[in-house]
Length: 369
Image (cartoon, rainbow, N blue to C red; front, side):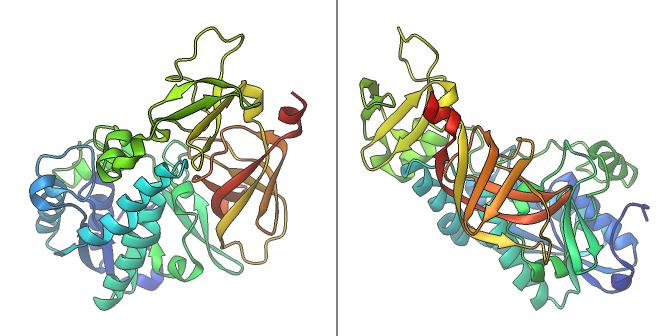
């Protein structure tokens, strides 16, 4: 068994369900769990119609991925179950994704999937199977603290997925294990190759599995034809500068694609007004945000009351922040804060929780400008 496999002595010899997407990460988790002496069961959620999923690449939980997960389980000599959750995924993740874009927001379907289809549903399935824990291939660390288990960022910053797991609850954290959080990805692939797993060199899945070609607008238009409603592009004073072919083509902070020539300085999307079908643009300094109002706040920080930092995008660096009720203030200002995204709260490497960004307040620097 690999030294960094954080299974926990309390689970040795017990029953562990492993969430298997068909990729190298979850396959290695299953292999290491099985080698630890635990009774290991692989579970895969089918999130697409099997026929439509065949041949799909760069995704997860599709036809080929299910076959890969089954092949790994066969090699390891462990049970593998597939559960059809296509309609649940379509209603709770894909439809919500389209509605968010229609409302002028920037959604994060991976978090919604973890909150619902993957964690909530997999938890129920794991408990129905009599499991003592649910293990996943996420790159985060579960560490024991004075008040119980804590969620920490992965040891490898380049692989850290803690931003996408901010909605994990205390009860879920008690049941979860993240064995790969202390490993770099090359080491995980090396383990897969050493064990002779066929997925050792399989490419990583892309973030949004149900948009394999990256064309979000086309998917939204297919689901919500009204998404192509045209409207005005205006500056911060309301002056009309041009027209657009649908809010779904724009996100806060975007510069390309505005097609507004002859302007004295580069213009960016500052906000989207879905009610008026307007795209409001302005100079980069107008993107500075001083505070954001959060909804669905999830706190797993226990009694922690010290300084916090916040990440407002998955690739952003945490910056100092102050949480007062549902208002998250950025004393130094922050850029790229978009409604629909998540604000994830940290104390060093520890995840304290987070919430969904509902609306933003311009920073003083933007008002002064």
